[in-house]
Length: 513
Picture (cartoon, rainbow, N blue to C red):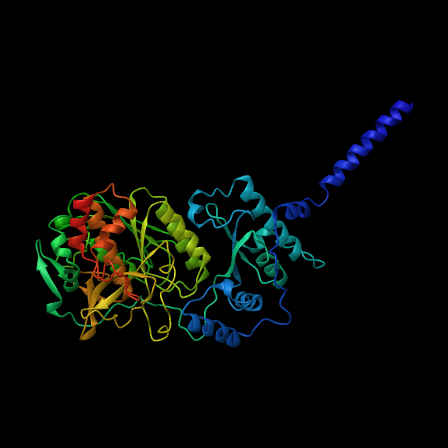
């Protein structure tokens, strides 16, 4: 009997011990995985800043630094920006001891134990904190916007200042950023979508066989001379932009028209909306500049007119101001990075606000060997105070801007220390006479300006160079472009190495690789 009582008592203790050990698994998980920073910030007191005051604080910092990052503002400003937007917040996460993962983000597997533990601990912390109030029962799907299956990013709809502060105070949180904040006095719709209405000047193009038009500024980059050696065959250019026109057959059924009739491929995809085609057809102009066919339709040709083309729509216009646009652009970078055929990426969009989400996407594609050309920025009347925008300003991208014939900055282009190359794309005497590209439909050329067209042109030049020596790596490609550029070996403080020289770069590749 005593032996039976002893066994029962022992069993009871074991069960009790097991129950005690498993009690509060989320708390234990957080304690073991989540590590607080040495000097945590305090939870903001009082109400969030009103929109007018918030805009003044943020724009003042942007103007004074010619740059902006969310980690540089205090917790109250960050929290206020979340409240005064669509309330979406991106959380970049990692194990506390991982260090800077930028150079290895393409190798991260979010399903490994180390990352999954952090992910789940953050999820537990957020839900427990939100549900502390009596009667609340918030579930993960109630606040989840995107749980990235590739990169360590969670995007939530979240405004609780206590939760936001606790997250920002963790070593496991690489960044915590409002995804949708935008100043009230800045137009956030339609930017870059309106085509030029300026009448075509006959001196802004020449005609080449088999009846294709060459934009005037191609000669400033020695592109026609480069065509004697390379036309981009065997290379696929990826373009991420706001949308394509379904009515431009030269980027569809006639992509292999004229001298481009070599069986090259054109494909489309989207990470925003339900189609690659959109009322904002900025992407049509960019694709046509980079890889439009050397046609027999009396329309403009692209730079790399024998290169393949893959287009992804990731925005509504060229200003990445909405949360969905930043997420979609990041996802487009991931898709481009995972395509073995895409060697070069052209992105003519951006934002003045530093974004960890955009950086993660660009780093991912860059680390997988893609050469990313990104627009330094194009000003409208309300953006003249921006410097080089993001993601162009990140080291994973090659910032390109446009200049006039006389070498001065184009009327609407941004420049700065992050710029690597320039493209001549604007007449010195008339800022309305820019480069020429395909219109949304038909063969009549349309003017297209800004750093956008400079970027797509640079991507086309890179394809010409890479086509001569397809086995070159990205560093070798950059050497060809840089060592033959206008200012090499001295980098200009605001225009980088200056204008690209397509012919010289092609010949350099042949001679050296």
